[in-house]
Length: 228
Image (cartoon, rainbow, N blue to C red; front, side):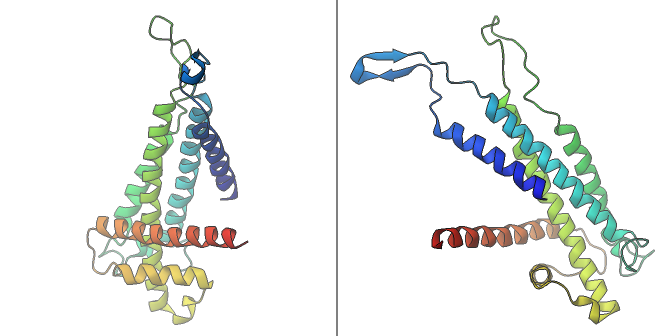
């Protein structure tokens, strides 16, 4: 997670520098009757940064899917039932969510191939080195959307695991205060899976809850910085 945060910070600084720079070509200075051909339009730094965002999102997706796999495996989940089903063998629990999450991670891995190394000359070799920054940026956006869905899937499983843990042993409900607060928000947002039901709405709602929590954390962080 720390490596991901560092990568996001680096990409943010590169993109902010590019947005704050002058990228028009040519530049017109009417007061000096000057047309300056600077050629400052090459988007390779942002293309590299966008590819880094895709790679980072994919690795975070790997982590989320593996954590979800850990929760549903009765050999590794601390005694919870397989697939987090209330009635194993009669119910599927979050099995469908985990299958979809695995497929999503596979798609993210395919899409994580860097766009910025795919340069092909075009336009009669007038465009001789092409950074593919737009493709890299669009892929990074799609990867972020997939990651959001994966985190929503993991949150559904965590909510279900919390429900089953409480039913098995009320003492197991204890935990870090902030983690308990997140689980309480998720528990208030949607019901446990019993009996089986389609969980696409729950995954979307869980993602929204995580958005709200993340937004409040970011706001608090900025407020503390301003006060300092």
